[in-house]
Amino acid sequence: MENKFRVSQVFKLVLPTIFMMSFMSLYTIVDGAFVSRFVSTDALSAVNIAYPYVNFILGLSIMLGSGGCALVMKKIGEGRSDEAKKDFSLIIVFTLIISIILVILSLLSIEYILKILQAKDDLYEYTKNYLFYMIVFATPTMLKFIVEQFLVAINKSKIALILSVSGGILNIVLDYLFIVIFSWGIKGAAIATGLGYAVPAIIGLMFFIKKSSLLHFKKPSKNIYVILKSCSNGSSEMVSQLSSGIITFLFNYVMLKYIGEDGVAAITIILYIQYLVTSIFLGYSIGVCPKISFFYGNQDIPMLKSLISISLKIVWGISILSYIIILISSPILVMFFTDPNTNVFNLTIDGLKIYSISFLIVGTLIFISGMFTAFSNGRVSAIISFLRALVFESTGIVVLPIMIGISGVWWAVPIARLLGALVCLYFYKKYKPIYRY
Image (tube, rainbow, N blue to C red; front, side):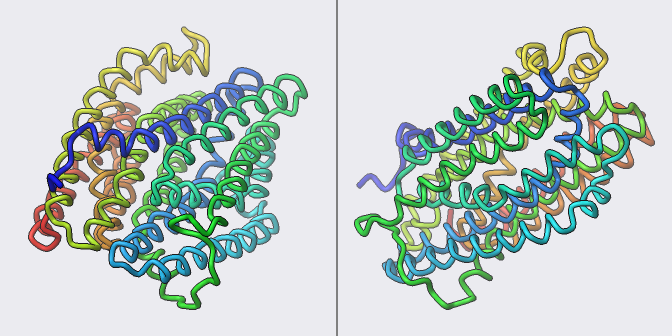
């Protein structure tokens, strides 16, 4: 053993999860393009208005998945594999129960949710139709993200990738069938997305039935601490997703106030492009963080140091490359959603020139936050996510347009992420002697 990683080894570790998350973002973008092109840009705006609720669902699943993975993999690293299997089984059962309760409560209160989301006028029916079917598919949506994270954790990254790609292709095919052929409109987009999540969720669960698997279903643990610890440990991911929903809500509110529905469509397109960029870093984090948990669990400090050091360099390199590519290709990307020389197109291009500066920073924020989750220090991860999004970004979105006009909306995110990077640097230095990375 060399007691250190090579760059090629790290890429072999993370490429499946990067491709998995990137492909998922690509078919989400295609989903939005179908809505924009074959329904209307108003329908695309409605998808964005409904998205804070979707972020909440994703937040729950990523919180349980990432927090649970760190807990389970740490126990495996400590040689407590039987206990880890029981904990894993409990997390899956809990997800199933809580998601069903969430579906029932959400359907009963859908009008109230629409009121909170500020769905009004021409966008109301679009938003209601989309939201209804996303609620119906909440259970497979949550299970999909959790199952894929655990598949990655047990070195089944290629299977997770295949499932994600298969679900994405199904989503795209069904988008064409439901929206273009059947003319179901925005309802078709939601059903296609839901089925695209459901198929990999069901198939993925089957891989944990085999007794030969590193993790497989056993009689679930009765220790409620496992759920509480998973939620606590993954709280940063929940905060991040909830923050994303709140930020989306604020963007929609400010755009409707200053520009109108074209402004909502423009910020929706930019958020789709941001999703493409952040998916790369989320994929990297999902791929590498279970290993950080494992090496921390068995106190293999040389491997831990090597993995984190190489990871930071790779993340910085990808950040610079992503920024350059997005700047060069932005007209092509925006044309997927709207025709050139339209008001929406011009607004999006102008905003993206400023907004894309944040892509230089977001990878570091995602990795550092994920790293602390891997150390089972959800508190620090949550503080980073809370300050970056709920404090810095939300304040910027509300205040900067008052000070410098609509360009303040675009500057809010780059400035917030720069401040978030300073917070990350503080915690990175503070905890370096403790975790010895």
